[in-house]
Length: 158
Image 1 (cartoon, one colour):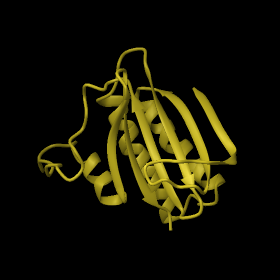
Image 2 (spheres, rainbow, N blue to C red):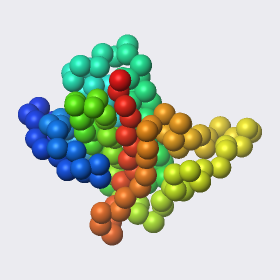
Image 3 (cartoon, rainbow, N blue to C red):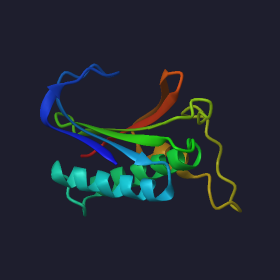
Image 4 (cartoon, helix red, strand yellow):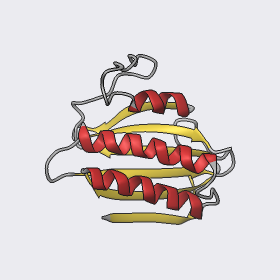
């Protein structure tokens, strides 16, 4: 497990061209159910450290989103011997959290936002991205290189 926590503030320019200070947390985890559980727990701990206690709706929502995306990375994005990466970026000015999960399977991209089909009632799985779409302000997929893909979402914490 490798962690990189930036406790200082730094300028960040992303899709929304934010110029406010941000906080970052990055962690590599094994692409296993245990790695997905650990991602959820460590994300909740990091949000608690940043001022959103465990028992707040914001922390619980963010932890659920991390759980869904990290489980997808461990199940659908798994390549034997390769990890997945969790990255949290907090924009305190507008209390927005960006959650990114990067895995080594760019060939297995999820459906585009807004095009998800309802889950079959008889199946035990298939609802994760529906939850992500319902609970986040927006989400998507990016491929920064030919070897990985990142599924991300943003959630308002207030």
